[in-house]
Length: 189
Image 1: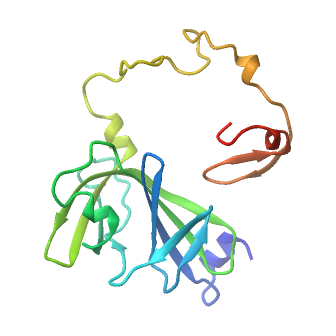
Image 2 (image 1 turned 30 degrees about the vertical axis):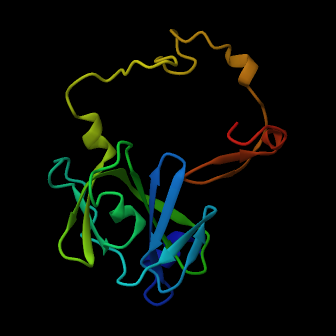
């Protein structure tokens, strides 16, 4: 069955929601399922006390679209905010899928805006959509030691052909694109 068939089925659908948090190269995965789920090379752990959200909304209003995740205060993600928020952005990606199906949807992408500890055992993680961060006023272009131009645009002087590989795409998902010609390249190419 395809993802959409599972989604519309009255009895065959077994929905799972996966929550991926990423801070730089470090990733944490949690799931609403009753067992650990391996997805896109990450083990999404089921956690005592569970993880829930207050529903994904897409109204266009930044305040109304804030997503609140409820999870145990003992999780690594919540503990990062126990004393002071980390200096690096923590990204959140939410996947929906079904048991027994390889198909999935990326249903929400954003950043952690803050964490409130309601008591000793529960944390509420407020998340903002990527759209919200783009709507903020202020400087958009950040200056750094590296180049601030978009890769290969008119202002970029990197030679595009030196980094080009041609091939037939073998797989695509919400995170990566694969093709046989890239197998001879180093990781991250």
